[in-house]
Length: 336
Image 1 (tube, helix red, strand yellow):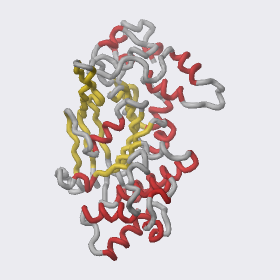
Image 2 (image 1 turned 90 degrees about the vertical axis):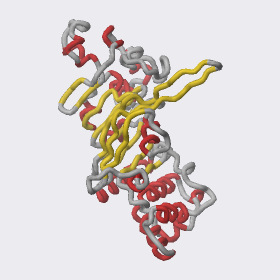
Image 3 (image 1 turned 60 degrees about the horizontal axis):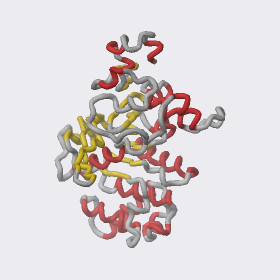
């Protein structure tokens, strides 16, 4: 089984406006581990840096700093040549990620050949049919001869999952794999990923903005805001006992039919601005959420480390630091 270690990952982009150049930090010192048989969810609003992390792990983007290392079943570091044999990605839009001019068989035969997983036409055809049947596309022989436009969105995403499994990958990066699908078929695709994870002990990075699916599908949740991980912990703990003000804002923004409250009312109750407000992400060392946080203090302009908010639960927030007691005289109860 393959383990993926991400350490202090940084990605800077150069932004040009007329004759002026500036640097935008899309990912700021992100670290986590993807272990066999476990799912880590990376959640946050659009522009928080989730997909940039995924693209760097898939080696579609080069990190500015930090390391990404895969360790094979024998305990040795996976070299650059065989990295993609171990790590594969499922993209958000299943139609855009498949070539409309080629059959489904072509999409699966190519990775099988490139990674030496099968030889000869008969063996390739058999492997293709087995891959399609593993993702519940039957009969495999018939589906293999179709083209992407002849399949539904859910079926195309299942083909994309089969293509990720074709090289024998043990680490799967799923970048919002159900956001482009109808609500009625999302659960089926997520259950498929969960089943494949159990059967093959896959290490899965699940990227989403949907807290509900993140809670039920993952073991650990990392909440990202403006390139930084602001809270992390066990899935239930992060969702049900959120500590960071941003995580609470995300949870409150989810529709709740029973409360009858609208999103505007929820935002008004927190005193925070709508998502996307404020200045763009920079390399500023203070808390990046302080311009929207209803509990911002003077100390929030200082570099903020991770603070323990429970057993295995951390939040990058000064509300849980002893140094903030003077800034919040009411004590820990008021700060939480």
